[in-house]
Length: 206
Image (cartoon, rainbow, N blue to C red; front, side, top):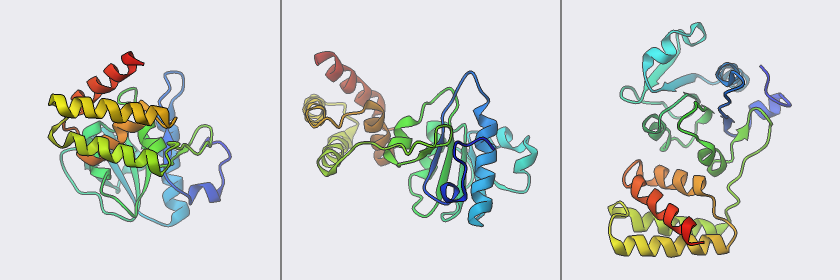
């Protein structure tokens, strides 16, 4: 397993993020990392994937619990390998509190926002990824999500969210990927397309 600075201490701390690369086979790295993390912690490994067939063809996953975006429930408290997950599949991780996640990104969707928001360790560089958010920034994110209770579709929510994004920029804590990850964890996929349009408009206005 090729994780940078691979130590037992790293394997026992926090979440892990394996970024996509079109130059290297990161899925092999992610598979080995998840197995190593589960072994180091002495905890069961659950595989989360878009389709069960995506994981069932891998010998390393035989005998493991495999959960798809449509079927199965992830037991909280073990290690979860999110294997090239869709955004819909990732929704099954949002309520987990005691689990360790190893997220192996495919070319789409990109999940760096999730990694920053959840202080995940980049398995390639060993960097601990962070959102840079302080309490005031998190409060603004909370307010953005509150404005989206109807999916950010009306003009009042649109303007108010633009103003909150501007405030977040002024604090130096704006990161589009983090805003979207936070909104997805709070609201799922509801209204995210509308939120993206608000973020695009706010970026144009800068």
